[in-house]
Amino acid sequence: MGHLDVKQLKSPKDKALYIHHLVKDLEALDIMLKKEMIEEEPIRIGAEQEFCVVTKDYFPNNNSIEVLKEINDEHFTTEIGKYNLEINSDPLILKGKCFSQLHLDLKSLLKKAEEAAHKKDSKIILTGILPTLRLKHIGEEYMTNMPRYHVLNNSLKDSRRENFNIHIKGVDELNLIHDCVMLEACNTSFQTHLQIAPQEFVDKYNWAQAIAGPVLASCVNSPILFGRELWSETRIALFTQSIDTRANSFIHNEKQSRVSFGADWERGSVSDIFRDHIARFRSLLTSDEHDNSLDLLEADKIPKLRALQLHNGTVYKWNRVCYGVGGGKPHLRIECRYIPSGPTLKDEIANMVFWVGLMKGQPEKYKDIHLNMDFKDAKNNFFKAARNGMETQFKWNKKLVSAQDLILHEFLPIARKGLEQMNVDKDDINTYLLVIENRLKSNNGAEWMISSFRELQKSKTNFEALQNMTAYMHKNQLKDKTVDTWGKFNPDQNLKIDISRIVKHNMNTKILLVDQNDSLELVSNIMRWKKIHHMPVINKKKELTGLLSWTDLIKLGNKELHLRVKDVMTKALITISQEASLEDAKNLMKTYDINCLPVVRNKELLGILTSSDF
Image (cartoon, rainbow, N blue to C red; front, side, top):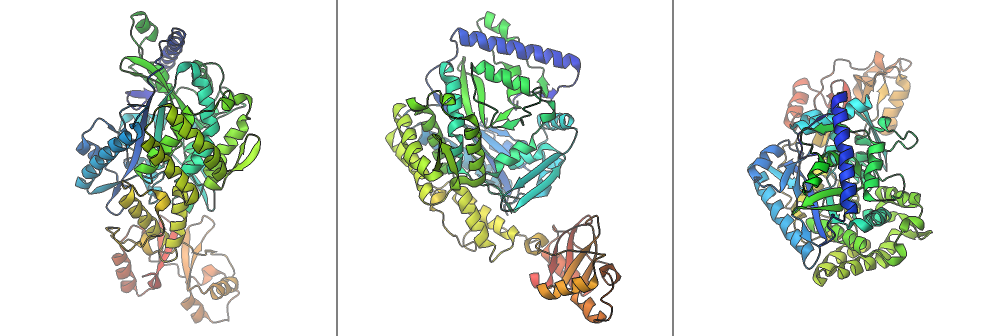
């Protein structure tokens, strides 16, 4: 979809023409499968490396197009957010030192991106979800100014006819109603591609589904979104809910999200997988670049199946079926989409090696996995892994097995055998599988991030803690020091954060609120019990309407505690934005001789800043 000049599918004429091309593409694929035209070997691998572009103080930057122009390399392309870019690696034959070669290729390209970003006063970050993302970064003003992203956004919104409702519950909880698909920009992945021979495609796809939970558990890296601790791999829940058009499914009893694990094991041929997607999900986009695939086959040319690929580009299975043409030959791939970006390039390559090894090492006893494993167990394993990471208990061989035991004693040996069968270099196998093994004894990305975040919160505000973690990740992302070796770090040493301190750095967000109609006696006791000097007051609409201070209560004495809060509170408030500089806040307090500034956006209270917060 990203390479086509797309437009929204609206008129009956456009819909009829697009469906015609879609059906012909499926017929052409069936013919190529029947005539054994699909390439079987050599087996190739590839990857898509997504990354974030940030400011010098590690907040999302909106200059990815400028950075892309400075890079000037066809391996790079845009993403939906102005603070995201993507690298498409060159395909490599699965043998020898292919993984260390991919490591070197991506490292060279990322260094090129870092140099270009530096010229634009920016940095790049490898991470599943950028810790310093804020709600303001998911507005349409941060959407990349290219038609295809706006067309997709409008198509999804027209299909839903309502806002996107995000609800994710972990240690903390996120409830969010949002009006566009920009939540997708929060997700940054390391998408891994493996070429699959057509005759074994469906069995390999089902095997990919079966192993997804344990693989995900080993590499989770996205536990924090908007300062909240959610799932170990929050991307799974967020992406599922951020692109959702279920109301348009033909199969009303299923109602899958466009981002899904699937509804059942696959059967038949790869064409049947595509047919199922077309039956379940309405086409949203079209293009003027479609070909008549059957005519191309008649002329001994290989069709690109543009209509089918366009539809497939709007169905986001965590294991996605892909068709492509390379070197004039058609091929099939499975794209593993659930592996997150970061926290280091070496960690990412290790994740890929583990997955590819498992795919190629599938033991004979796990052939036809759909006959021996309940699909709902595979699906449940996947979502448990997304929530709990390495703490997951998996259902495997009809028994409950810990993530550590399953990966260490069964999955790592399978992966090693699969890589050896493909004649992958022994040093590559040992180097990258050791990274996975060491994580089992130490920590993966999500575990490191949560422990660091909690430790930093003891001495810093949430905002500062997230900034410091991001700085540390940036410092180490291209080094060979993988996340399992990262321990506690001193945030005040060598992180080189160029901080222009704003109100959000110091404001207090853990505050009690009272209603303007609450009893003054109750509120005065709450302030005494909790040793609170300033109490923000809101109305039924949750809007800030006043401020009650301890000074107000002292002046009042104990004579009129039968009054309501609104009878006593200060209504003429001096407020400040969270984006304002701390110096401005200090000057405001000094000018008006006050010790507390409510921090607001419109009439919504975000926090308070008191003189003690400085």
